[in-house]
Length: 296
Image (cartoon, rainbow, N blue to C red; front, side, top):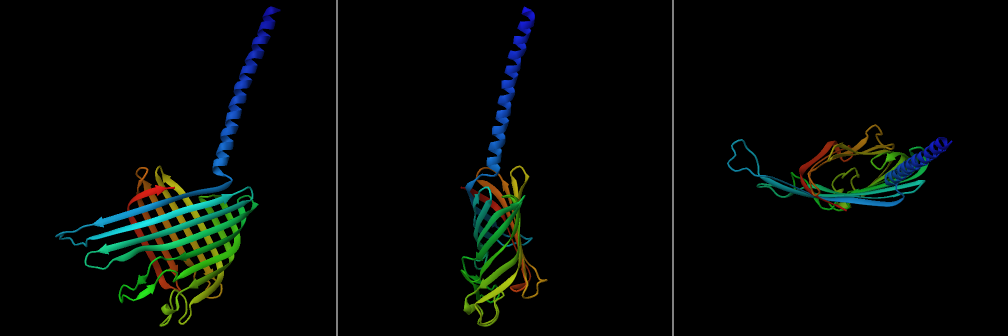
């Protein structure tokens, strides 16, 4: 009888101990899962940004194979401030960049000049889908000149691009989202002195603005190719219902950041634009160099 009682007590104590251990493990797992969920989908505002300085230099002296000495520098800002709640998402991004290149025996030229603001608000619909409303603004900081004639062709807020419209957004995370806006208004503004002798950036001669109405698709995808190598893709498509809707405007940007340490990176930026109203062909921009990054 004593043996049975002792065995029963031992079995009970063992069960209680294991139960407590299992309960602690389960509680710990629940806490970890809850913390991970909050990390992936935090409520309220999240803000993060990166300031980058890129530098390139090439020097040739009595180099028989040929080459021109040059030096260039670029500064850039990529800043996000996003809001999340149970039913709402509001994503905001500011992209700014400015760069100069000096080639031996030539004048200083711009290698980058842009100021972009994107805002996208979404109301939960179902699953990953949201009812959305977006606004996009683009312009430049400094004047631009024709390389052949030296005539000024642009300056700050000329041109200035505005796009806005309702639509539907598919968003799996901050790093993967697509917005479809089938009723998008687009406005292009230039100073009248750029259209005195002919059209400029799609604005007709003698005018200072151009209005378009069409469909826009905006996609964003960022991923880690490998450890310390991130790849960011930004794609914007636009079709004007009012004129040649088959000629789709394209703006694609690829940013690759290869992290060396906390502050040093190797950066590659590639951008291609097709807008037949401004230029009948592809415009391309590529910048690569050693970067100094500061995150905040």
